[in-house]
Length: 259
Ligand code: ADP
Image (cartoon, rainbow, N blue to C red; front, side, top):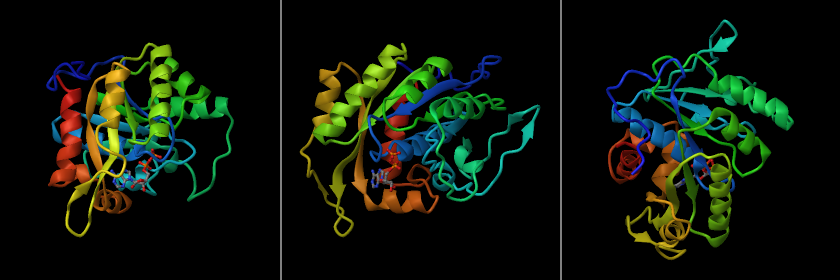
């Protein structure tokens, strides 16, 4: 098993900065941002000093997910300070820099520059910096992983065939950049009935785990499609910060990233 942090009590890995854990997906809408936020919160609850960069520059959602929307980062010597969240995770997101809802129509090189500034910020004692990558497997993603060299990557997919094909493209992207893939997470895995709590599997069971085997990467766990996850996320109350099966699903995945 590949752990992202060797020792939780270890001093921060200065002067190089924190270890980067990239969370990627082959396409949008599969829950990459939800997973990034909740993995960060789960790791923080386990005592890891965690930061989060929202590199999903066209659709930043972390300030909403981690309840620090509307806050502006301070800066010193032309470097930004991350914005604290109530959940022990500091965050930097394009969402902290743009005015409400203004669409960003930047070209690749400008995006790479902005991303670099979010990552090259005053992360201080942060041990693990989770990066919520932009969805997809294009040039922006490749440049980002080549330049910032994540220590490991997690790929998230839903159980549909098409999403799985895209997930294998994400695997190719990380392999091309020599980034170790720590494993595949199945999101929206089965449906939790909000009335009776029963779990059903509209897409069948085990597709992502099978795909992980086929692609020769570890399977890190499943998170069901659960109304409570959507509602908590929209309200800035990450399920991983609470109690119950939703928190446990994210904690189980986070534990697999530790030695
Ligand atoms: P991505 O970052 O891949 O585009 P998001 O994390 O923004 O995807 O998720 C897309 C939508 O699906 C959001 O409204 C989010 O709250 C919801 N969502 C994600 N994962 C789950 C889940 N396991 N259960 C219920 N809703 C989810």
